[in-house]
Image 1 (cartoon, rainbow, N blue to C red):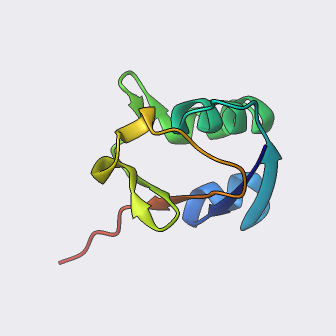
Image 2: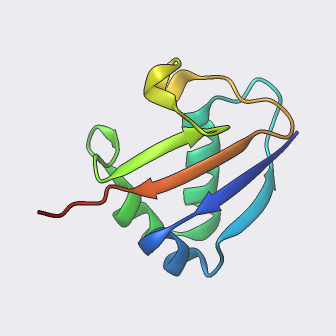
Image 3: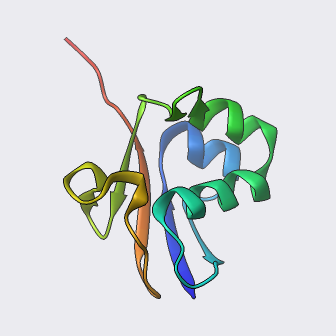
Length: 93
């Protein structure tokens, strides 16, 4: 099944594009898809996106324009044609 990624900020820079599509196995979860992307891109993306607890708290993971934390978190199942966006937290003051 095919999943589209929208990439922003430093992830976009590391991946060299703002959008990409990847094929993942049926029954994949959000965390599986992100892991596949990290494996595909390499260690620079791993150090940027991952921490000891999974996905760095510096990023928001959106599935079809909904924060995955309002769904089943990283355990949320993905479906063919879904869009996954990785957004950096914006801070200011």
